[in-house]
Image (tube, rainbow, N blue to C red; front, top):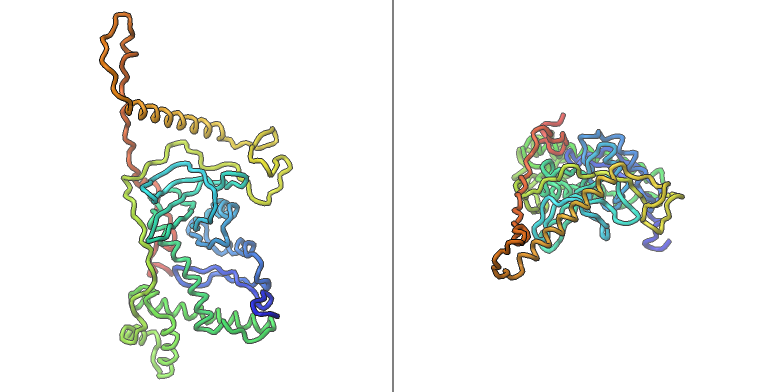
Length: 381
């Protein structure tokens, strides 16, 4: 076969990786390297505990249905924004220039998500970063934490790099599937043990796990063991002198921190759920070419009338503010004495004072979710 032919690839791995403990949670082999791994990803959710898990996935798993089903199952998630994704803004918590934190509907045309999600954006250097998450309360998950957490998705790429570079999985020993799988699982088992030893060294040295060099640790442990020494103890004792423990070179995303008093609270009664419409769904009652939901066969969201009333009220407020701003820009009229038969109220207009909205404060009744990534490593069993 020619170089670059996809049939030369022995397969594909769909994996679930714990970025906090740096351990593989689940791995599934797929013989077809071009096959989509969504089906396997759904199966891996069984190993996750709902309510305490936050899922980070790359754009290969960007799907409105996937996001909604994660929310239905009780999982929190963060994703990058895929290009040309249409949204409808529901509420803006904060906006200053290119930086914003707001709630949006996913999909403005035929394809629509079920739940309102949170969209954040900021610029770091010359790059504009955007993320989606179903954690809609900015006091539970601030914008800066969203950027910091999604950056940890790169950990799984580093874990695959360890398999290829340190453990030699870039070179397959054989073309037989049985031998290929034997090599793959052997490398994964060794990587799992190696990552656990790295975490142990980091805990004993009281440093960040990424301050422990995995390639140097991989070389030092056998040498210490051959001399009759405890490899972990020696790495902790001599790690800094040998360069095994050194400052981490990982890039840190600098995201803006938005003060709570600058967040605009979400109005009460805001509709956060609607009837979804996903790609490839066949509905004989609804033509694909039109996004107008008309006809008695269409299922109407129970809070549709309330949503329409809120939108109309908001539209009336915007028009009133626009008329007020236009009136203030006009030149002041000359003072004319009031005629006896004239109505005094028609001669003057009282200016409507804007009532400042109270700032968002963290609700003490809402406990911070017990996500494992928010706990220190020493708290794990």
